[in-house]
Structure formats: C-alpha cells, structure tokens
Length: 379
Length: 261
Image 1 (spheres, rainbow over the protein chains, first blue to last red):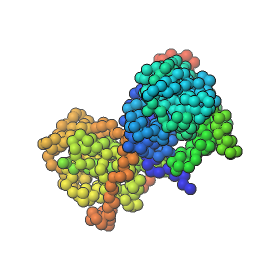
Image 2 (cartoon, chains in turn blue, green; image 1 turned 60 degrees about the horizontal axis):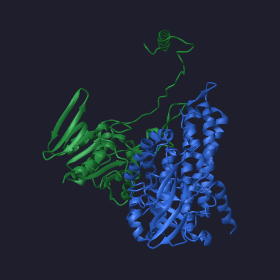
Image 3 (cartoon, one colour; image 1 turned 30 degrees about the horizontal axis):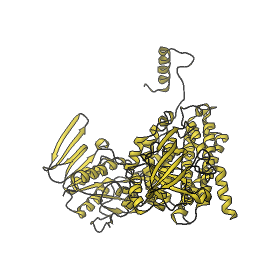
Image 4 (cartoon, chains in turn purple, orange; image 1 turned 135 degrees about the vertical axis):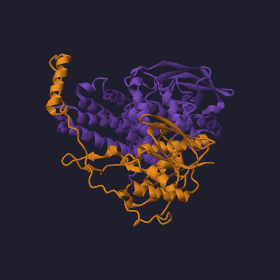
C-alpha cells in the first residue's frame, strides 16, 4: 500500500494550485457576485491542457491518470467551486462518455475539440419530473429517416447556454423503462435546440445552470451515442466518474474552509489572545482537518480504482457522500470561526458555505448515494 | 544553432520555514524544496530563446537533493538536465558551487550563453554568475532585464541603480537576470507529462575533474536565527480623536518606544 502521490501528481497539484491562486481565486468573488460565467478562464484551462485531463492524447486530451484529474478539480475548487464544476461536468459527463461509448467518427468529430478545449460540453439528464427518479424521462426521440426527432425539456443543466456539445438522454422506447432510454450527442446549433431559463442559485453562481428545450429538434442518426436503449447505462457510468469529481470539488471547498479558518484563527485576537489558542476553535479545526483527510482518501481511492479498471461505483458514491457532507460541515464551522465577519462578503467563507450545499444535491443527492452504497452491499 | 544553458538552485521554500518561539531557531521539518525564485526567470529566459530563436536549451544544477527537481525543471522548457547530486553540497558556498557548475558546462561543451538568476532565494550571494564567467573565461553581464540573441552576438539591457545600460556582447557570456526580465510560465499538463521522457545526466565529480580537498568552502555558517516581529496591537485614533491629536499621540508613542531615535 502506498499513500504517496507520484512526483508527476505532485507537480500537477503545484501547477494547478499556482494557476488557481493567480488566475482563478482573484475573480472568484466577483463572478459569484455578478453571476458571471468565467469565459476567460476556459481559454486558460485550454492553454494548460486541463480540458481533457483523463482523455488520451490521440483524442485531444492530456492522457493523465484519474487521481491527477481529482487533484485538478480539487485545486480549482479550492479557489473557485464554480470553475471546478464547469470543468468536472465537461470532463466527467461529456468527454468521458464519448471516449467510452463513442464511435471513432464521433470521437474525431466531438471528443477531439472538447478534450483540446476548443469546445465546451454539457450533460442533459435531469428533467422537471425526472430528478432523483432519473429513469422517468419524458423527453422523447423518434427515428424519422436519417434523423431522430427530440421533444421535451431538461433542467438544471450545468454549462447550459455556454456549452457547444451536449449529451442528451431521451426515451426511444417508453415500453422498455430504463432500457428504452438512449443517449445522443447534440450541437447547440441543431434546429429546435433551445436554451431556456437560467437559474438564480444559492451558490456556484459563476457556473451557468439552465433549462434546455427540444422542439422537434433533429439529430442525425449517427449522433446516437452507444446503442439504442443504452442511454441509462451510459448516464449511470458517466455519473460514477462525475460523482468522484463532485467529491473532489467538495474536497476543494472543504480545504478552502480549513485554510481560511486556520489563517483567521491565528490573526483574530480576542481576550488578548489569537482565537486559535482557545480549545473551542482548536476542536473545530481538528474536526475539519480529520474529516477532510478522510474525504481525500475516499476521493483518491475511488479514482485509483477507476484507473486500475476495478469496480468503483460504490466507492465513488462514498467519496461524494462523505466529501459533500464534510464540505457543508466545514462551511458551517468556517463561518462560525469567522463570527460576524464570516457572515459577510468581506470574507470568502460565506461563499464556500453556499457553494458546498450543491455538492450534496447534484449528480445524485446524499440519499441517492446511500441507495447506491446499500445497493452494492445487498446485491 | 546557439547553445544556451540555464543554471538553477534547488532551495528550501522559505514559506515553509518555521521560527521557534523560544529561541528563534529555524525549524525545517516540514519544509519543501523549490526552484530558486530568480532561477525560474533564468529558465524561462532560456525557454524563450529556444522557442523564439531556435536555440538549443539545456539546464544544469548541483546540490544535495537535486534529483527531486528534475521533472519540475524539465517541464519548464530545457531539453535535458546535467547535474551533480552530492550530500555534502548542502554546506558549500558559491565558490564551490560555481566550480562544479563550470565543470558541468565545460563537459557539455560549446556553450554560447549561460543564464543564472541574479541571486539565490536562500543565500543571495550574487556570486555564482560572475565566478562562473571567470572560471569559464566568458564575459560577465549582471542585472540583466532584457536579453536577446542577434546575428552580432548577445544583446542585453542592464537595469542599474541610476540608469539603464544596453550592451552587445560578442562571444560566449554568462548573464545574471533580474525577476522583471519575464514572467515564468506555469507549465501545462502536457509539458509536465512530457518531462519524464526528457533525458537527464548525472555527473560524478571525477568526470569534471573536481577535487574536493582542493576546493573547500571558504565560508562557514555558524548559526541562523529568525527575527520575530512583535506587534503591539494599539489603536491610536480611538474615542473620536482628531487626526492632529492622533498624529501627536502616535509621535509620542514612537518616541517612547525609541523608534524615532
């Protein structure tokens, strides 16, 4: 057993941390305040070859390992959770399924520009009536000659409106339940593809979250991803990778909470002493640090399993479950340690707390994670 | 094609050094290493000459623990690194360092330009560059904040205390660069991953004809202790004090502290 990151992984952490500290952190509060999607950051992520971390070089990516990918998302999210999820969604839920299930033509046409950072991706599974019950898809896809015609709407789509390429789940055969769901690769310019309302959110306000509507949207037959009826499996497999990524995002948020809290505990003087000298604060810091370390091990371990082609679905769920709860707890403690200042936008911890909440919800709620874990125990 | 070599030092990251409260001694327990700050500028200068002028670009170093630095440096541009890794180099001064670096550079052969940082992040002696020039028989140019290779030779701009000097150097030279010469790159993921494919050459002291007994350090560090700044945490402008009265109060306090003496 080896808990040591490789020299390469350490260098990747150093690189992303330097980038995040100098280019991402300085605008994090501003993009949150203005609900502004940080387009300029995408160009920089592209220049650093971070848009396709786990995608092989032959398909435009960098060919790094899954733990490195976790480190990238963790370090970006430590500076800005919005930026973390923009990249995690693009990589885990769009690049990865095309790599895994796409034809060679689809990989050349869609994956290469996505993984090289020319294009941005989004993933459309959730619908107004199909959240946790993702199998209840109402969006339909009907074959008409050389095209599938899609009708329906999706909601809470991360990168919606800014993405060029969308993976969309739709029912091709309602009678078959989950086996009647198919996955399609769609372009934003397809006729009948409409970006709907943008959500006004509690946190991750720098990321875009929109409705996507399909009105007789015609998708070429060759854009079917995998086989007809394979969509639910593709979605669940992609979400396994995605959940490890959200775990890494939560880990980054939690670490940021700890970093700011340690700094404040040393600076803030009350009763003539830094507040870090009081046991009440020390215990909060110790709890945060311990849980963050647990979360880090879970996230990296899930990635290690994936990298070694071992089953990792339950472990990814554990990583997301634990890391997201840790991020929330760390957020609450960080604000508490900062007292009144922590409740204001003068310090970043209120943003961390708002950003943390979504990690318990998207890509499967905490309750769904427990269903996945228990399901693996009892099957 | 001109051959350019950047020298760098692998130093303790000063941000990780802790000063012990009781005796102000330095605690290095959790200290990591990094490329000396200005040497990052030297490496970037070499990388730019490679990319923009097609120069061959290599790096050299010596020290007690430099193998940990190789991939980091290789991700920043050089095609290869030649190095001497010896434990006893932890306690040497710039006279020894420059002799070893000169030996490595001579072994590489036909080097047109050597780039060093103006001084290292730890000792900041500013001696390695000029000493190297003397040992190699090269021209020495310090305080460089612009560097170019032209048909005529090496063109540099030196930023001096009272002005700017522009020079053209014919023949091989050692230049020491200032931090404002460039902004060192953040290596991309592909550059990091490609670093492992680049060659490195570990060189023995014997190969460069270095005699330890004849080259003992001339400088010996007896002790190092940190300085701790203690704050009084006083607020001068309390209770609605006017600016004038607050200024007078501040002056009185500074006099009482002996700060204005």
